[in-house]
Image (cartoon, rainbow, N blue to C red; front, top):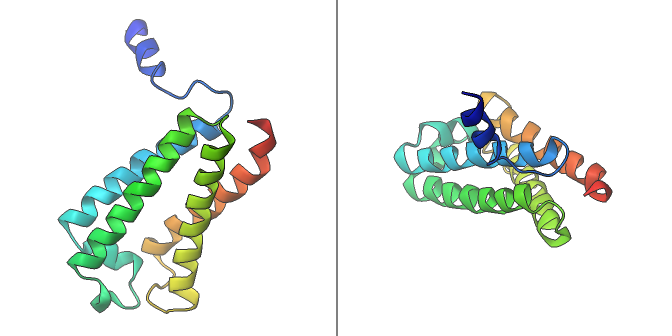
Length: 138
């Protein structure tokens, strides 16, 4: 059992600290979220709950594709956290996501604060802040 556990741990990012593991976790969750955007509109409508009538198959799949692209950037950052270009791209992916969600809530009015929006806002703001404050350590 210990050998299996050691082998599984070997697949995790090997750099110090929790940030690379966080990037991996968020990336995996984002892949799952991307898949569901192709399967159903239910969860995308929870994010854009102020105007769920504007969510359709095309907008949901576009959102899923965008989320998958961000996931790939974050996955690369998890395993290449010492590469400043990859690190900066990951920061930008979170900052852009945060801007998107906040603007849909505060400017465009398609999102409302609730279960579908709070998670993305917390993850994007926490991750952006964490990465900016830790930049010099990696």
